[in-house]
Length: 181
Image (cartoon, rainbow, N blue to C red; front, side, top):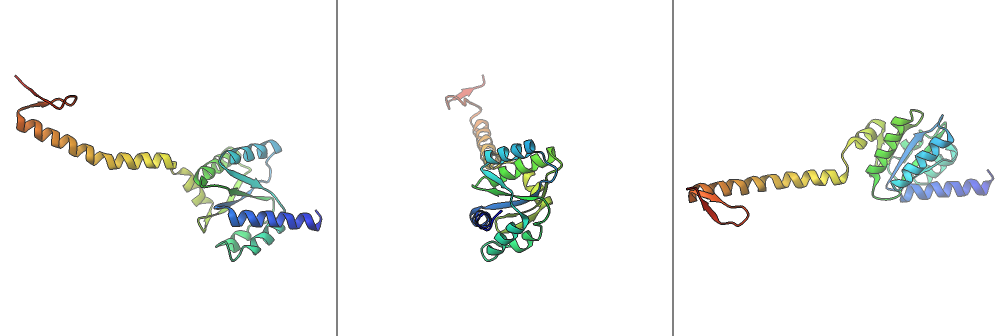
């Protein structure tokens, strides 16, 4: 790499650090080209990207972002050996984390070292915990069910009170009273 290529690589990583909502440091030593292609494909599907450059150039880019990105100084200490960066390029970071953790489970050579997410440094265990959480859609469905349950129970109780007071059953379809007789 000549000096211009190095400067371009540093500028690219620098820009990704500044604009990405999340970044993850992974050790990829031992992965085949085919496995790396599968990783990149899976990350692209989740609006993410995997980039590899020299560890020294990643450190320089991190140092340029020390004022913009919290905890990057701790993050950059892990820039050694064969490491790459995974960047999230949208608001679908939890799905990206799930994809990354799933790939790491299927391919033991990929090791997730740490991440920067929502201005926090997160380590491997926290990343795996985040991956185990249900998706946003599932959580919203659970919330809707939880909010709906008391209302439905109240409606059933009121219907039961109405039925007992009227001495008959209330037809749910027509709203008219049927007598038991």
